Image (cartoon, rainbow, N blue to C red; front, side):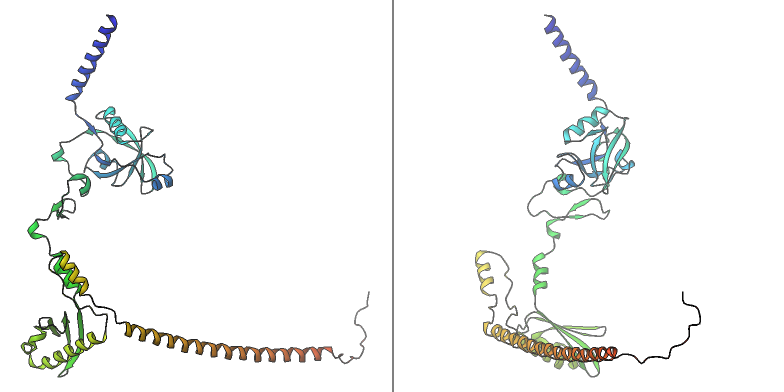
Amino acid sequence: MRKEALLWRCAVLLLLGTLSRAGEPRPHLGVILDDAPLPELLTKHLQLDPGQGLRISNIILGGPADKAGLERDDLIVAFQGAKVMSYPQFVAAVRGAGVGAEVTLDVVHLGQRKTIHVKLEAAPEPKKAVWKYPPEPETMMPWRLGRIFKIGPDGRELLEVPFDRIPDLGRDFRRFMKESYTYHRTTEGEDCTITIEGDPADQDSELVVQAGEQKYSATVGSIKALPEKYREPARQAVEDARSSVAKDGHARRFSWPGSWGPEARRQFFEGLPRPDLQRLLEQKDLALKKLQEQMEQLRQRVNEMDTQNREMLDRLRQKSETKKSKSAEPPPSAPAEAPSKPVI
């Protein structure tokens, strides 16, 4: 009976303690932590134990961590001198310290390990928390196919782009992939630039004439819409572009499919230009011929340098032998002179 009474008394005390803490403010550090383990390579270079450390992914403005100078991507590796080995362990330790407690954190900031002192505060209401950095979408909000976000004007908040305002990426990509030809011409003493956007053989391809600050637009099929003095240079530019396409076998001349079904993909790949094998073989033969000519010129140059070196060595050898023969002859004897000082 005594044992049962003791157990019931402990259970009641535990329940009363839990209820008494339910109304108390919850202590917090003012951070969002990434509960994923740190990469093995990072822990190796920082000399941490496997599984040690948590990364800070965001910070509440004005919170305890912000006041202590912590930043996003800082690593918390110890709390009150004990190693931080898991997310639940760290959360339990912070809550166990209580509001107003002054605790120590071992952190890695910009590659430097240091110990900082932080005073825990009561956690604010979630709606009143202001985050220092843009929330990380993968942890802050659910994703679905076709959902696109952009950074807001304040540089911190992520805003969802409405479906009707999503840019036409296909149109921009088609514009990027479209053929373009630019020519510079002089007409009546005035320089102008003529640009053809698209296939020059297509009557609907855009044609733009830029003369100083003036810009005139037309199509390949409506060159007559241009001012008269630019018509002939524009026609010549179109002819030059068509000639360039005819010479370049690799020029892309295909229409971008509107939809990407199986039939559209088949037509797209069938419409891709085939390489001009004959032209490639001619280019290969020409490149080999030029390489042979360069090798022959190099061989001749090496032979010339070898001949020059041999001649130089022969001249040096002759000079050396002449000096040796002169030094072998005995020098003429000089008249004996009385020594000026006694020889000892």
